[in-house]
Amino acid sequence: MQIRLLYYSQCHQKWQRNIMKNELQPTLLVSPSTAEYSNLLSDLYEIKLRKALADEYGFAYVGEFSPEGIAIANFDNFGGKGGFYIDRNGQTLPFKTYDMVHPFQEGYAVAEIHKFKNGDEHRGTYQLDRRLINSAGEDRLPTNWTVESGFKNGLAIVRDNSIDWHDAGTFFINHEGKPVTRPYFGLRHFSEGLAVAEVSYSYPGPTDENYQDYIYINSMDKKVLPTDRSSYWHAAGFSEELAVVGDHRHSNYFIDRSGTKMTSSFTDAWDFQESFACVNSGTWSRDYYDLCPDQPEWYFINREAENPFNAWYDHLTSFSEGIAFAAKDRATYLLDISGNRMAVSKDIDQMVPFSEGLMIIKRKEKYHYLDHNFSLAIDRAFESADSFHHGLAEVCDGSSEMIIDKSGLEIFHQPNLQK
Image 1 (cartoon, rainbow, N blue to C red):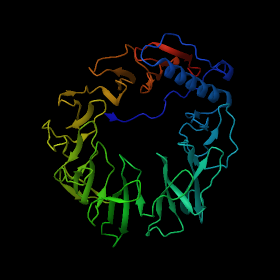
Image 2: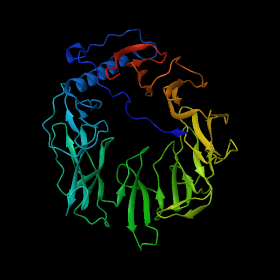
Image 3: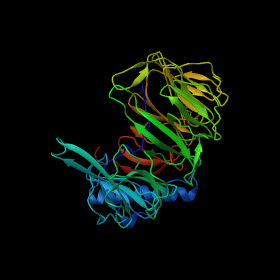
Image 4: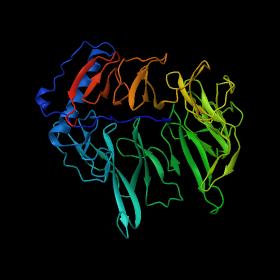
């Protein structure tokens, strides 16, 4: 069985040209039953606008519009090389041409320049330069800086390329482009008020492991954890007031915001989600590039580090809306937070986690929506289906592309001209 998340619509066929910009005022076929009326109208308008622009200008892909009214468009469904920015009239913005572009966030977007030294894209040395542009297309960063992560909560992570990568050259900047922290060897965005900072890095030899030291800093660029002069061998961001840290590669444990060790050590551990965390206590052996488990034994722990379900699995996912996916001995299960387990029928080929109370399964090449009782929520099948957002989902039934609410009623539909 395939278990994965779907991020983009699977319905990319062209829509009829009669959905033009002057005909985009939404006309609802039914009264909204599962979404707030204003959200439904707004989402429906945006979907119809993007479909209309794709049809009118021949775009294969039009992304969501930012608050500034800018979206990514492409003639390639996968949004790869050749992506560019358009306004809400479908006009290409007169920005510099980039090899790959990313959506605007907080008024800025990351745009990539792919450089090849001593050759072309098939031969030679590859170098990635990630720029940070504003809504006017201006790149105000110094040429020797490159973006490692775009803006989140007012901060972006950049690196000074004039500094050797063995040295500290990564720091946070604000919207004015000014550094707000000292340089570190690496940074991760703030999570629950603290950010992970890498304070040293060494590589003794090709057969030895990297030695990396991590600390937690606050918004004033002050070290918060560990509270003494030490550091962690590795560290993850805080989630539900707990974070995974370790003393070496296979010693993982959880700490609270005071730095107190809350659990014993695990071979591997993931963040807490909905009061439970996935952990592994199996044995490990050396692989070609890395270390991997010999016999994976994944299980859930609660905040007291107990295994409340007394069950172990080969594969496990975090809980989403109270449901997790698990696999053991080639069987797949659905788990709830009370420890109840239900075997998944072998004729189900794919599952998509719950979103707004509904999950998606694929059975015999058709997609279905299930509720939290694992019963059919919508009494019809689709050739493709997306997760619900603001009470709406895009689906295809073969002859038409449509937008439905959670009761399965069609809010809007359009004949599929490629059928």
